Image 1 (tube, rainbow, N blue to C red):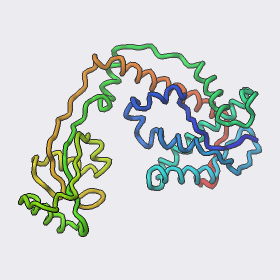
Image 2: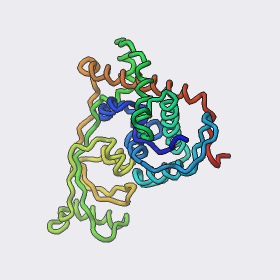
Image 3: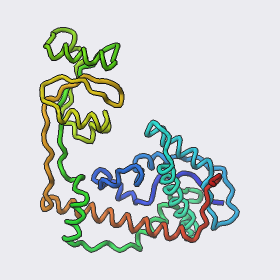
Image 4: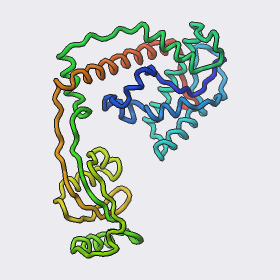
Length: 287
């Protein structure tokens, strides 16, 4: 009976993981790919208590869901929604299929019961059958335009936050801002925080989209009260550097490698999903 441990490696080969930092934007979307979370999921080395009588039947048991929820919550600070849980199940299923296919190919010889190595060897067999896509400038340019958010230099913001101790209600923060704009000296600067070159995406992640748009549109040098996802803050825009669109030619080599990585990953995923077609997959407790 094969183990159903959550593995450490997904459909992407480790050699491609080194390019994670340059991965296209869609790979960073939480519903499409869980790079960081996947690494946590696959590091789990517990055995899942499930019984599989039919070698062509795969049951995604309650323990898989429980471990996925726990690891997602530890990483994101919240429970996964239905779509995110479905994506985590699919990642686990891909690896279960690779594990079983690896056993069928007897690639486990020499290292029995080591699930991760079996999955890696099975994936290596899949990878060897893939054809490297032919590079075409027209396709590269089209792909570059679709993914230019990855290559464009975003707008960057220099700003300051004056931290108010105690009451941080809207009224208290607005009163604090008025005092700051009057130039009152002394202890008011004790809680000053300075931020340099923060990109728009970082502001959205840290404070929320409404705050990012508001401070980018604010006049420089003026303290204002802002409602953020964590409450009211007193902040001042110091400088705003406008976004700079990227040019294709200087980045052609980078774009080519990114496109090849993505295309090969899509081929690899399609091959694994084709393998999965021979199995009957069910989710324990699903209606």
